[in-house]
Image (cartoon, rainbow, N blue to C red):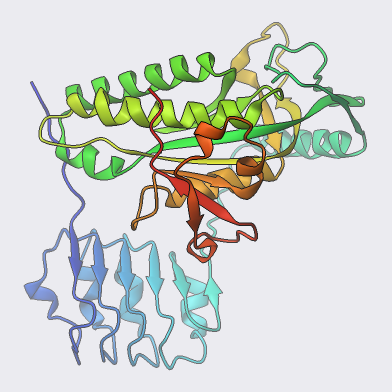
Length: 358
């Protein structure tokens, strides 16, 4: 039996020139997201609490100057957005009694509930505090490498009670992410989605190995690949073209009445690698430790991936450093400069291409 997910109940009435909050009795009582931004509303009705499942209320850019205690009856509300309103400060009764977050131009009130548990939890917090102090009083030394390390690397150590060892390498980091995955989850049944994700991950893993790449992180449908230092720019860009070909051809055939595209971003630079985790006596299990990749290549490649394949930006986006590191002239063909202002916090030149490598 196929079970379809219920879509969250949303209502968008932003920018409708409304002068009053919609009458509560006319609204869906199970609504969870209500957007009334960019109107001329002056107050929130006292009976707002009748919307028992309302979690997010957007009232940005209206004319609300004060809040009434009726808002406290909105028992499921998690966040109230009020920036762009003539409200100078929050009333004291709000600060003392509210159990949700409020965001205004001049103030961000975060609700942080405190719950007292038994003494074991307090002891746990004290133990964590002592261990963190111990971690911070020791140093980490880094050794150079040209090969991408794994979590089993004996030369990368995590010792909370002594100095630690890590590794450094100059490398390319590639991120690949499915475009429109949220819409695909809404559109397709679970069986189709299982086939899609399993096939996508398998294909990317297989292709990266052929280009001396190593998958080092998978979060949902976003995959992080790190390449051995030798010829890393050629390998990373070739890998990107092969993934793009695989997605355009085989992956698109898996989804009925739908296309399949991915966005890929690549950046080059120095990465530091450390091991983190929790040492559990008698349990040397990978669930308790992992590698952390520190450096610009990972952070900036991820930002490039966020925009790749969206808003007429090519599906494969690389930094200028990666392009300059290419020695295979055939891989340079087709790359053109992309306006770097389209990317968040990017201060280098960006090039893009819908590269296909068969």
